[in-house]
Length: 115
Image (tube, rainbow, N blue to C red; front, side, top):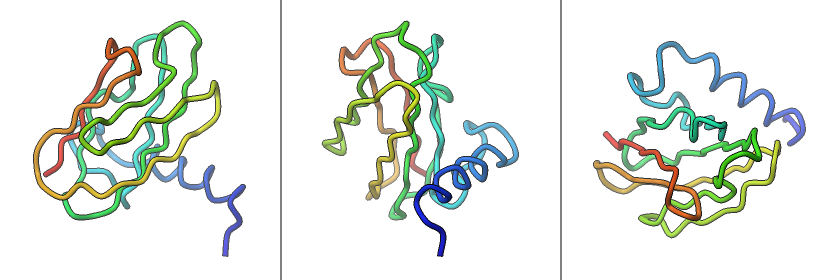
């Protein structure tokens, strides 16, 4: 069994190695890596399947935006994003549709397409 310090880097490599852009293919194995850069959330659109747990691994890579929090209001999720520290958020979307996420100021956003 992998300990936690080995699991996260391995999980990020698996997520980064998935073929195609995140907007074209559903998340593999329920794991989605999202970075916060000067351009905002990258990728800004991801696809996941309904009824299956998904773990977002969000890493803020810059201090030059207001995206210091991650808010997914439809799932009652609000988490701080410390600089250069991966933050894991796990939830299970119940139905198909779009889930909008944003920074704490609601200025930078993205969406999760559940299909």
